[in-house]
Length: 478
Image (cartoon, rainbow, N blue to C red; front, side):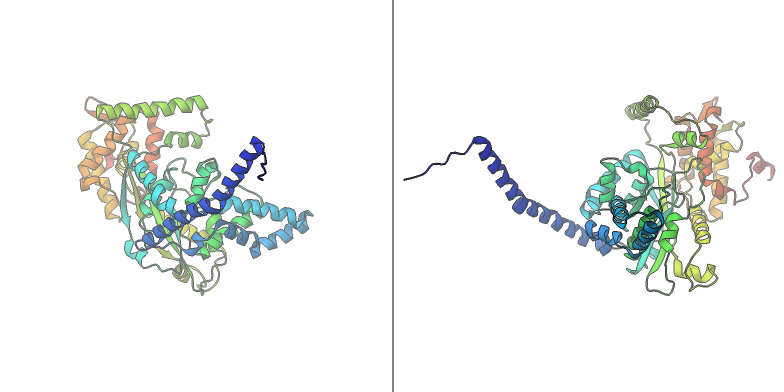
């Protein structure tokens, strides 16, 4: 005799869902994880055969493990004890804040995303916006680095595109880990940055506990051999000039460095420049303390920019935004630097200001000299003068000769100076920064600040040569 058990429909559906969930959790999900882990490991093995700086094991450590290590870092625990006593707060409350900070800071690097998806997106994006060029790289110096070196790429900061351009051009050498400001903590950008190995920094945080957690992570990453990318200026240049270094992250990286130890810290100066910075007008507004534009004005500008590019593409006059160029300089080994620049080469470095100044100087020396910067330099020094194209090119050739003879690195498109200067003139006339009338080129007076902005990108190089303020004096000195 068979017994029939009747089950309500809702209960049957619930049991079915629970069974599917169990099946998914115990069979399907582990299989999917194994497939992605297997593919990621294959990518890591593949890229490590061609990278100048291999992916360190620290970067591949599970995020949860790194968070736990950071939460119980000795320096962090000391800070918790001090604050608990000073502020009469329980250690559990402070420890919870530390974990919150650690979860905010620690990245979740994914090799598959970084070297496949992110690299593909970066390549497509930068080539759709710029003609991207690697001007110079000391590949011999990079090849000489060993696994016991903590490598830090130190670069100037002109645009938010710096992250993408540098990541793209450095992808054949290493996987960079960036310190990214709070502006990027929006969904889904922050998740993408974490998966690419970036970590977030609260630039103006006055919380000593947060600063201690951040310091501990930066030191852990440096000790773990993670190649880091740092913008010493701390923010985008507002006026186009190379700014002074802020000492925060640089101090964290070098704190506790033992000159007699096994591991060395190697700084690689990186110079970046653009024929057009996408945020140039916004940055100039910020430099003059003008109020930020409203959302409607921003949207109007964005639509206008898009329509202009589409119309230029249809008419065959779209030249993207000129050239974007990156130079990788000669590595600076901290042990050797201390021997020649420090009172005692074996003593710990307590003041990083001299090191920061030296690194910023090295960055400045390798900033690429691009066509727009050359033309802007000449015209901005005589804003009342109208130039014929032939005269402007002659002045540009003279300036390029001075700069190259001084050892600075100019990127000459196609190796043709005439074509290169033509590119600079074309970029500025397309934006109505220069106006052509009756065969002469003159400044649009409303755009003089913008012209100075691009001239400022190489002003420190020009000032170190014998190039005069008044271009007419070149002819008079002959």
